[in-house]
Each structure stands twice: as C-alpha cells, then as structure tokens.
View 1 (spheres, one colour):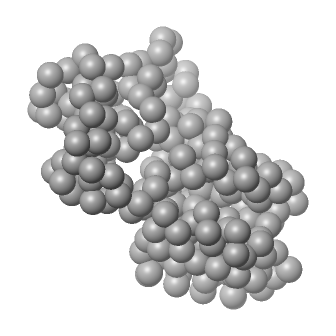
View 2: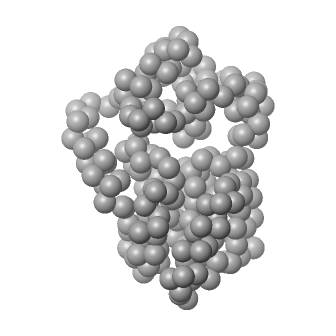
Length: 215
C-alpha cells in the first residue's frame, strides 16, 4: 500500500485523482492540501511515501516547496502534477528534487504507473513532456534570459502575462504588493524589458509559458 499526499488547489482535480487511485487500488491517500502554505504542515502531520504536488497554488510556489520538502523529508518522493509542460518547469522541478513530472491531461492514463515507479525508487517523466523537453533543449543553443529568473520571479512573470494585477498576485502569493513590485522590477531588469507589453511579447516570442496562448 502506497501512502500518498495530494496538494492541489482545485477540488475537482483532487476528487478526480482520488477516484483514479481508488479504482486502481494499492494507494492510501492520507492527506490533502488546497494551498501551498498548508503543504509543509500536512507533510509533517501525515507521513507518506509520495506527494502529488501542483506547481501553481495560492500561498507558496510549487518549485520552492519541492526544495523545502526534499530538505526536511529526504525520503518523501515528490511527483509534480501540473498543467505546465514547458521544459523550463520540468528542468527546474527536477533540479529542485522532484522524482516525477506529468501533466494533468495525462493523469488518467499515466498516474498509476508513474506513482508505482517513483514509490519504487525510480523517476518518471511522461512521454509527451519528455519529447517537448528534448525538442526544447535541441533548439536552445545558448542560455535565454528567462533562465536567470528565480522561481518566484518566474511565477510573478507568469501571472503578469496572464493579466493579473499586482494586488491579485500579492494576494495569491501571500506577500505584499510592494514585494511583488520588487520581483517585477528584478525580472524586467533580467529580461531587459521596460513595460508589461514587452513582457507579454517576450513570453510569446520565447514560448515561455506555452505556445498555445494559455498561460
């Protein structure tokens, strides 16, 4: 029996994952969290072998959480379950200590096998993500500017491009608007742009958050 934690801010997603795992058998879901800030305490209160972790949740950045969880609970295996299939997220997740990475659209067919492999000590990347990762790395001869962004700066960048105001971003990340402004200033300096419109153009040109227009 694999003891499992689920961290995702969407109730429908959590219920869907629970349904898949209950049908498969062999899994015990011992805890759930609906925001990033609640994850560390959940992990301390409910020992488990694997945690399914969304990257984009209110309160805490998923990439930051991976690093914290790996430092505090070395035996815990982290499997990222996200809508982000871009190579930058995959690379950052594994560098932070993730053991698996799959997209939500592939969960119905890949989740069970991914969890078994990771719980057994292996690593897992869904074929679609692996292909996109390989394609991105082949086409990237030199380092692009957005690779220099911190995980929090990348999250602020994503939310700005998605049309969120600084106040909305501050609320989502549980920080002050002034702090968000600081992140914005830093990321604009690193990307060498001077306006929100330029940020959007940069994101589209480099397909930072996907090439389908969904951020």
